[in-house]
Amino acid sequence: EVQLLESGGGFIQPGGSLRLSCVASGFTFNSHAMSWVRQAPGKGLEWVSSVSHSDVYTYYADSVKGRFTISRDNSKNTVFLEMNSLRAEDTALYYCARDPHYYERNSYFRGPSFFDYWGQGTLVTVSS
Amino acid sequence: DIQLTQSPSTLSASVGDRVTITCRASQSVSDWLAWYQQKPGKAPQLLIYKTSSLESAVPSRFSGSGSGAEFTLTISTLQPDDFATYYCQQYNTFSTFGQGTKLEI
Image (tube, rainbow over all chains, first blue to last red; front, side, top):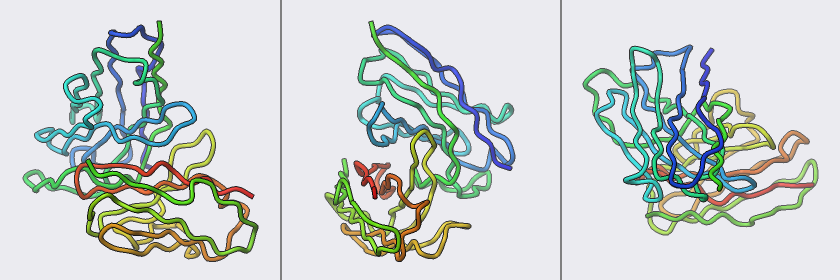
C-alpha cells in the first residue's frame, strides 16, 4: 500500500525557516518524481515544487522560487521542502504527492505531472 | 504562467442529475489535464488524467473531454458521495490548478 507521511510543519514567525519531510512507503521511491502542493485555509490547491526521480531536475512555482528548495534522499525514501524567508501568505496545509510515472534510472523527465497519491498534509502557519 | 479558470465556482444539483464542470486555460495545454475530487478535511483524489483517462477504481459515471484550452468534467448520474469540490490541473507547462468548483445539494 502506498503511503506518504508528511511532518515538520508548525508555527513560525515571518522571515523564519522550516524544513518539511515526506516519508514514502509501498512503492519504488527512486523511480517516481515527487511534488509538494499546498492549500491555504479555505482556499484552493497550489502546486509548489517538483523533483525528478533522480533528484537532478527541480521545478518551482514563481511564488516560492528563490525561497524554497526541494530535494530528496532516495536511500531514506524521503522528499524534503526547505522553506526560507517565510511570509504570511505561505500559511497552508502542505501536501506531498506522487507522480505515477515509473522512471528508469536514466529516463528523461518531462517535468511536473499529475498526482495519484497524496499524503494527509502538514500545516505551516506563518504569523507574528 | 498558465491560468486555469473553472466554471461555475459553485454548482447546486440533486442526486440523479447530470452535471458538467468547465475548465478553461489561458493558453493551450494540449491534453495534459487532470481532474481531482476533494472532500472536507481530506486530501484530493485523482479522478481523470490526460483529459479523459479514468483513474483506476473511479466510477464510470465520471468522464472528461476537451483539448487545447477547454475541458469538461461530466458526472452522468450524481450520487450522494459526489458532493465535493472539484479541481482541474494542467501539467503541460510546470503545473497549475483551477480555483475549484464546489458541488453542493
